[in-house]
Image (cartoon, rainbow, N blue to C red):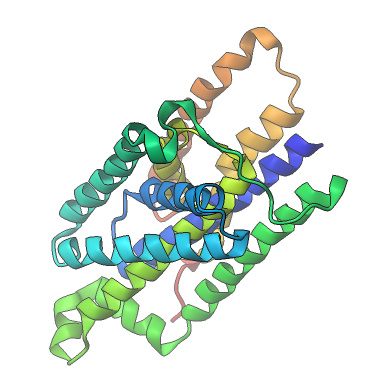
Length: 293
């Protein structure tokens, strides 16, 4: 049962970071391929603040989120004026740098040996895992409500104008770069917050957790569900992470001899899903329902 709660919490974390990716790409057009970098930096920063420095769980989480936001602000100030391909490469390079530092700076992160133990913020006995799942879902709900309300707000329309025609929006007197930079920093900090929540979820951290597969899974889920609508992120994550990491790995009666094939089959089916979606529903499952008006 504990593994089931862990799997559901993992799905909730993926929903959170995919919703934030929807805000960045679907709302503003920022091609962030460094999702795992911001998420991983938040995860390790939370662990260092809590275990090494002995800070309380909530303080460590807030400081880790703030640290990720500052890194995103600095990175965005350098690259967000560039074209989408340059932003893609720069954010991907940022994620690679985070992985390299986590691996090599053994004095701080433990390197490949690992780092921990990062405890839960509370101890309710057998109810600890479901309570922590509820906490993660609460953060996901906040992001979802914000994303839904943004769709009909004046600020949301400004962000859409920046995405669709930034030179025109700037010509009308809007400080487009400043808005885009702040939005990128805040949403990336949110990815760091879900990284901090993942630290207590995993409890023991190793560099292989900061793998490109986290970024690719979030992007695949967003494309499958539809980048223009928050519910698309949820549908995409449920059809990918939820299907494989919860249903198949937890409930499907897979013989032990074939268990090692599941990750490879998962990647093959991810690719098949993408091909089908690109052929018959290029905007995703909810592509036709993405924007109002």
